[in-house]
Image (cartoon, rainbow, N blue to C red):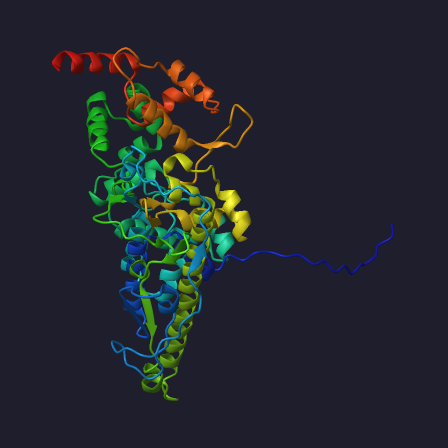
Amino acid sequence: MNLSVNLQVRQSQTLAMTPQLLQSIRLLQFHHTELQSFLDREAAGNPLIEVRPGAGDPLAAAASEAPDAAPGAAGPERAADLPTFGLPRSGASSDRANGVPIEDLAGHEIASLPAHALGEIDEVFADPAERRLARTAFADLIEAGYLAEPDLAAVAARLGVDVPHLETLLVRLQHEAEPAGLFARSLSECLAIQLARRDRLDPVMRCVLDHLPLLARRDFVALARLTGEDEAGLADILREIRALDPRPGAGLGSAAAPGIVPDVVVREGADGGFAVELNGEAFPRLLVHDSYRCEVGGPADAEGRRFLGECRQSASWLLRSLEQRARTVLKVATEIVRRQDLFLAQGPSALRPMTLQQVAETVGLHESTVSRVTANKFIATPRGTFEMRFFFTVAIQASDGGDAHSAESVKLRVRALIAAETVGGVLSDDDIAARLRGEGIELARRTVAKYREALGLPSSVQRRRELNARRLAG
């Protein structure tokens, strides 16, 4: 047997998800109120940062420097020079009368669960290092309030920390965060957290939680063998568990907005095109002050210099992230307006099919980045204010081989056909599908029924009864 030693050189590339990179990704998804809350919390722990309400050019206000000003005082600002985008109008018609209340098409829900999760983490952890680690590991929650990534071993491996340390932070967060049950990894753990706060998590209750499928089937015989409790005691346990909240994050997932503040504003230009610009009110401005460097910079205060260095580094990262966020929002919004200019010129019937992937390929971003940018962001247009996601619709193939139609424009055509019905001319779903086919829109009867129900329109039988009742009443 021959033994030999070989020396090989290999080159590989890996992407390291640093806490700063993960937070930058979250910033893209934040609605402006969530962004304001996040910056306020950052300013509370960083004496170099001052947050002011948004106004003016967001790209100029996103990054500011005040070398000699104390916190609370205004200093000179560094402005990023990025002009407003102007787009030519491709549609000639400016008719605004399409018979459809355009306000019905705009969304009014704003997600707030991510902001609440970050707020709870900041409340629980006073140590900056623990807070940063908890934000990176636990801030992503699903709608129910559970961890999006419950496998702590995988999270620890990705972040390069010990699993026991991560487990200790999670237990502390689960015990102190509100509402009780938030940051759980499973339904049984969520219920256990709530019972523990009521001092009701005894061994019998733990055993029942470990066998929730048996409880759901009311298999008291099997549970009695496992716990030693009789049927009456198990019935009491069932009533107690039913009183708990299995989805503590559901109430935080969305909140009705008292008023929509658009992130982007689209205006008609003098040349007949459209100008796309960021709305300063939706972008908080960040001021960074350097006055503490003189006060804490003495040679005897090494701890103060270290703290000041961390604050400066955090502030610089925030400045870059906010400016990049503003540029990315403007870039994506401009491409949306470019593709949907006929909608702005002619109305909802001219809405084109458009996907996240198409926009991502054009602007040079990843599809997931475009998805985050368009989440909970709004565009104010001459035809109303819409959520960015409204403009992304699936394509309905044309029966004559022409251009595809967007699902939203087809829904509006279905509404218009039904609105034009008379007592003797009520259309069935098959009739509507045939009419659409005659207009070059290939749609199955089942899809017509699905769109009709989504619009809140009754069946042909119900509509015929309503029309007859109106005729008799009239």
